[in-house]
Length: 173
Image (cartoon, rainbow, N blue to C red; front, top):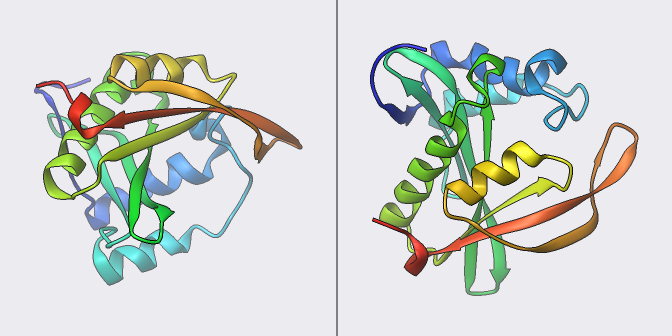
């Protein structure tokens, strides 16, 4: 998979093809990531406007050496009129899955978000059947909080999800 430690960086124009593949190609997204065809040009438009880094959401490329392994993303989840948390996600290339890169990318994203924003909570949601992502979130330091029933629609059926979270004071050095 290349040399060097895993790192995150803002997306470049050259990364757009990887992002589009990991969100729009059913072979690359994997079972839990495929939610049907949708307009892919929004990534290119957003990249042209702001480099995929906005006040209420963002996306960073995960690399090991010069090899693009996938990406992590976050979006604002309003929790009250005066507060919010981040909801994060990860998408790794099929050949990079199961090797710990997704766990490490999520750890790096959590550190980044706690270092550069004032949120107290970062959460992630994954389907109850996605054992690999549940394992990755637990290894990254997240706590499973509970089940949201019938939360997401995929593959012709409503799916239950687990909610995971990490609070600022739980971040391990």
